[in-house]
Amino acid sequence: LRVNGTSDEFELVEIVHELKKDNPELAELTLYDYTKNYEGAIQMMDKVDLTLSWHEKTDTNKALDLISKGLNFAVVFDTAKGQPLPAKFNGIKVIDGDTHDLRFLDQKGVIVGLRAKGKARNDQSGFVQKVAA
Image (cartoon, rainbow, N blue to C red; front, side, top):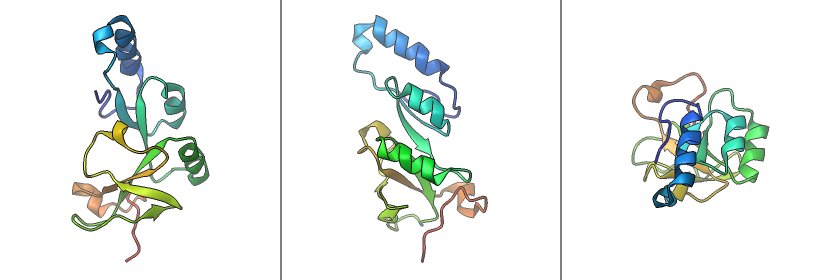
């Protein structure tokens, strides 16, 4: 179950987590989501599988530390559809996140590479990472 979709709030995670504890038939339900809320992600690691979002204000050293602890970061690249993503980003293995959205199935401690889509293809804020040509 992808819990939030568009927010970085964890109230719904808490509610569903409590429902899982009280209802054995929900025990196999995996909660997952994306978030920019790094501190919240650390506190919620035992309740929800979170993939952190790399953005224009990401502290690279903090991000690399979190990756070393087994968290993943989704990074949007300016890679065109059909082209391969970079093999590494900041020395960390990149996997292709466009093959599916079930982030809880991903290897841990990696970069989940995504290709820029829609308006993001023209992003100049630093959110979309440039790939050397």
